[in-house]
Length: 386
Image (cartoon, rainbow, N blue to C red):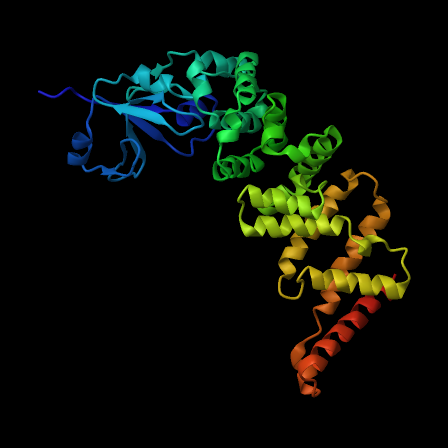
């Protein structure tokens, strides 16, 4: 006769339930089963590296209890052992933080071998065991959980922070591939306190490894202030706007290089580069003569590809409006007027249509010149109103 299998709710669902938070995703661990057992009950296997199955009706993930042992550096090189003799406690022990290493039996009993409930009460994020050090991705995950739960008073346990520092000093962070860093960074940018993510990484030395542009304290503080301002005043900001705000103190070349190295989506690269370009643009200097200013505004609109991609420029202007007060060395009133003039110039010049000029007989290079002249006149009309 086969060993009966037991099913437990695990991880974040148990944690959030105990915190009184909505449970978004439920993950399950199955103890005492084999892949064959799961398949005969209608589950569909989806895990390539270890046995994970989708429930035939709920489509929630059920993973066979497993242990992991490190064989190499970085977050690769784990040997996974999954068999009916792996216990629930052994499975929970491989997890990152005590608050994520709890389980709930079908009858409602909480299984908490590592003190997760006490850490929830104490508002602490603490590593389960020294095996935490085997996976550098856990540095980023811990910082992200700190960003999620900071408003509720959570902080990283000092011993865990020391372990994260030791991992960084040992060079483990350098083994993280850009795709995984970006994945965690992107999620962190949308947490309830995104700035906390970067503060935790800085406190353990990992931030400079991942984003060396922030080694200088003034640049780092300016970046975090801009991100905080965007988060507070534009809560619906998308990922591209958030990474652009973070990189705003950098030059457009630096921002472009960093987003490229992170292998972030092209939309993020384009917006970050544009925002940094606009921040330093001479079109923001409204003390120019009217002719010079109009030409600078039109040149900026052309360079921003504003006629084909007006929404991208609008997103850049949107984030600059809420973050400019934090950019050092800028004349704020003039900068805000410059932003407004650029937005109004875009709206006015967008009313120039090629079909109108085609109807007037313009063709070839003359058409392009006429379009440019009409747009320049539209920009002049905006400036003359002030």
